[in-house]
Image (cartoon, rainbow, N blue to C red; front, side):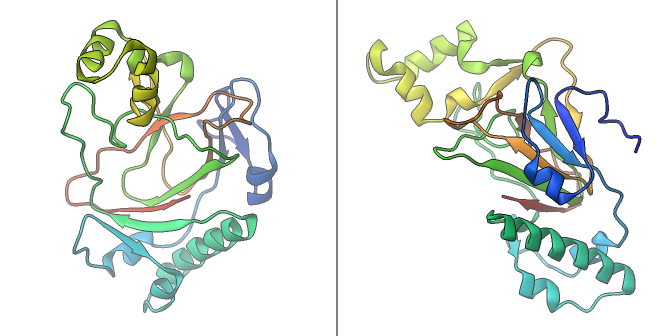
Length: 232
């Protein structure tokens, strides 16, 4: 198999869900990709739903209730199988149709929404799985191409000005409000677009993790286009 992700030592490429779930992260590799070219009309599935809010969770029953063309039915079977595999693995996958995520506009110098490059954190051993079936896809970035925002002197000083406490509990403040999860791109950094159709597993920051967590972000959505995203 030949694809753009081979040769990138951040990304391990696998050929099945079993490999995706069973392969260990190691070294600089903190993202695994089940690289696949999907058939089916995922846009038809998107067209069957109307959003009253920015994000809508779609259940398996919702999917099964749709009247679809043959191409739409092929897309549906792919999604349902992904949900089934992840659930059997012990994950809790969610299928979302979304217009956009909520923006964090409280601090103009330090947004903490998912459009900012960030890592996921968990108190237990887990990973983030995601697949964009339709619409703009997420991005990741190698860890050596980013800098933790809270380590940037001018940003750190602004955060200290917000902190109502002493120096001893400043790090707790950064942790409690998730500031330490966000990253700034270094000059010349080149994010990797995860593209549609591939199922990804990204390393999460947790006590048993042996590699650095994967830095990623949600994409800015295309005007007038929804995203169909599986995530857990």
